[in-house]
Image 1 (cartoon, one colour):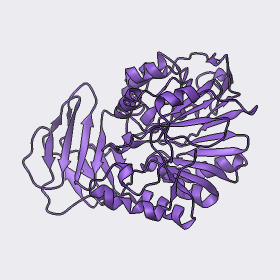
Image 2: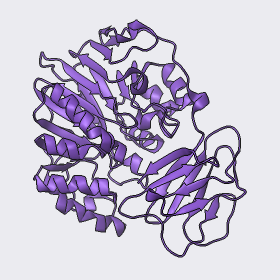
Image 3: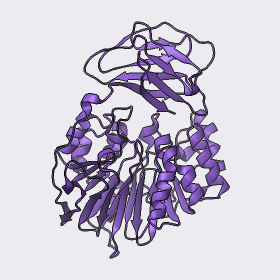
Image 4: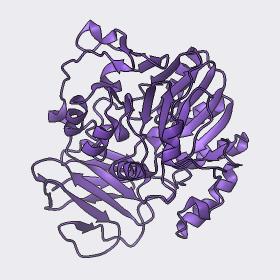
Length: 434
């Protein structure tokens, strides 16, 4: 099944339509698939004939970000590219694998920890197909990526739930998200892929969270999978109990950076995953590689964690992984509980959340934009446990859940900006790029 195509320049025009409230891809000039597959039809077509070659899936260690490489019989698909400073890391990894051309590159969504490295990828490798969620973003990172795609005349393809990606006849790649009508939350528009090779299946969640999980389940898609790439770096915004039960993974992969500002992975999500699967983490295990012949698979890791057995290849029989359980170090005690949870550049507000069990005094804490051009200082404010406060740029009356910067002019750059949160000692606690 082939996608219709459009240039990045034409795609940028949809920003105007999005701003005007047109968020249904069928109402925009975005590329759409000429034929969609219903969940019931997908289930009936899920059995594919293996090619006699191994499918290898690399979960690259790119710090606090995602990058996944699929390879089969000389064909290569890259899903995301990590932050900007990881572009060279991903490029070097691909070159070390002997890759000269990428058949597909998928951008799950426009956040910089998923597409920041795309400039390096697009400038170093010919790309046959570029796949995007179709939801535009106003960041400079996203704009630069589209300009390169347009300049190089790379075929640009937009997908949504029900589409398939024609990577190889032996591999069934279903798109389970985004829905036909976009969410207001950027993460919830992540491209979610279910990759099936023989009897072995992978579910790649991007940064999709609870909203997307509910949609996928209600739409009737079969999410049962052997290997789960956990959504949103194992944040508590995803991996709900019902969804994880439906997926019932044998192996869960968390792509996450060591000591990140967001407290990922969150302890309760790790606990949920460890009860049903063996959990691997790029911050602890380095790059994780899973190889399958369609009936069995092996897991190898770059680093040794606690014991030398961590670097052993774990094999499965009859698609049932025989992986050894290990004791995992729970770093939740050092995880920050107060962090920047959302940033809206157009509507001029930033949200700070407290996911801990105790209230936190923010007296003397500061919010700054990129380049520290503007600073907001909290005055005698306590953020209660499990709550969020929205800090608006403009003027208004403060309340328990809304605070106002009391400025006449905008703070946040609509072409892309970063919100930084510092505690009263000046230590950077969290940041969020939008």
